[in-house]
Length: 107
Image (cartoon, rainbow, N blue to C red; front, side, top):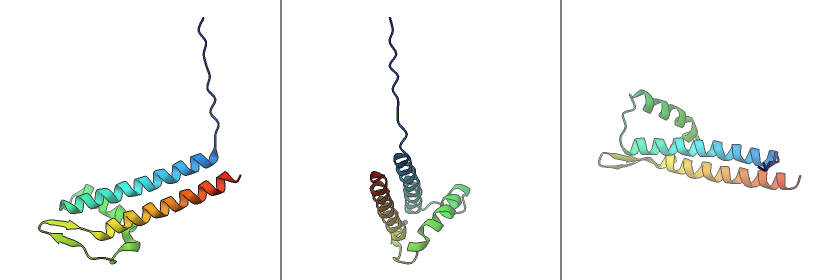
């Protein structure tokens, strides 16, 4: 005789919202990380893919633009604006998740 165990999972709206926020911040961080690597390696901005990545991430680094100059190391470019944007979005994401965790834990 075979017994089937049915596991019921409960739906928690708070957990879903936290996962959505975490996913969005993760995508933003990945795109900024890709931009950082492409700029470090001196990728050609005339390429369609590179232009697409730069086009999307330009609006993300907008609030941080001009804060720090880029560092040139031979043929490599280290853009501190992108690094600080990544740090800023990580902190903002962490704060949003902490706030939502606090709000949903009191419902």
